[in-house]
Amino acid sequence: MTADFSRVQQLFDAQLHEQKLHTAAQLVVMQDGGVVVDCAGGTGRDSNVTEETPLLLFSISKVLTGLCVHRLVETGQVEMDAPVSRYWQEFGRKGKETATIRHVFLHQAGIPAPHLRQQVFLWPFWSLVTRQLAGEQALFAPGTQTGYHLVNYGFIFGEVVRRVTGMPLNRYFQREFVEPLGLQRTWMRIPAAELAHSPRLVSNAREMDETATLFNLSIIRRALIPAATVHSTARDLAAIFQMLLDGGVYRDKNLLLPETVARAVQSGYNGWDSYLKENIHWGHGFILGGCIRPPGSDPRKDSLGWGSSAKTFSGMGMGTSMVWADPQARLVVAFTCNGMLGGEACPARWAAISNAVWDAVA
Image (cartoon, rainbow, N blue to C red):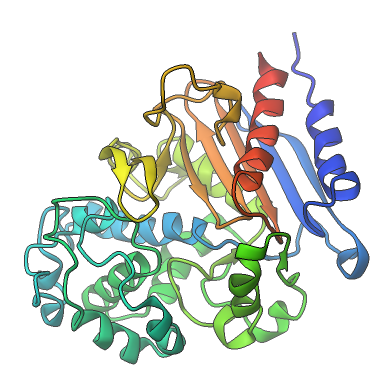
């Protein structure tokens, strides 16, 4: 029986036009390598949004930054269990001496988000923000606990890539992934001309007001913040995750070795995150399904949907976008939007989309 994805399309339309959860959105679903849902739309000033419109990805950016480091591990230029200071000497002080590349992947490097408000002013200036980060005191001994490295994950890995390759992270990403994949609408540093066509963030929750205001500033949106400012489309995200689902191959091009992909989506930690104040299942650059939940939890409330498992790998963008792939079901789901939701509203939006997809293939 052929799966019927019409309800997925209907849900997309309802969230946009009836529930008004966002004013711009895109959704792509792939099954067995073929596109089964491809829709985009907007309302009001965003009524001209198409499948080619780039949207801000927030922390889905971490997935793409992590892939660059995995590529360097694959080529032997970086080792997973080597200290960060082997590649960035200045980083190895003030309690961070033992922080390894793996610790960064698992958000265990000891500097989740200290002095975040002061650091914001340095984000657009790479040399300044990395110098500040190298001088930070570890809040906990690396490897002793897990605390989400909100933006420092990206700055650490970005500087490692720069030190190892001699080029900024955005150029390395362009060379190793964007160009070989043939992506046309993905940037780590979006050009000014393209930013003019990217929907502004809309806050639909008081706790998101400050973040939306900050990331609507062009100086922030165009800065190289590897954990937060990648711009892309649902189509491009789906292509990247389909490549991963196929063991690093896309359109007969080998971008990563199968063992590299397997390492990236391998479970690294499943438990309490001291920064997020909740349980989370970390892969190496990905959020995995199968997170530890209280007994009796409703699987339909899971952001990745009732059919997900520990094999499902994903990226989530703060209050907005989501992308995931499931190897067993051969599914890829990429959703982008500009409406920032807080509390339980955002996971509920993601769960509704994910469940609709799982229902379609049940």
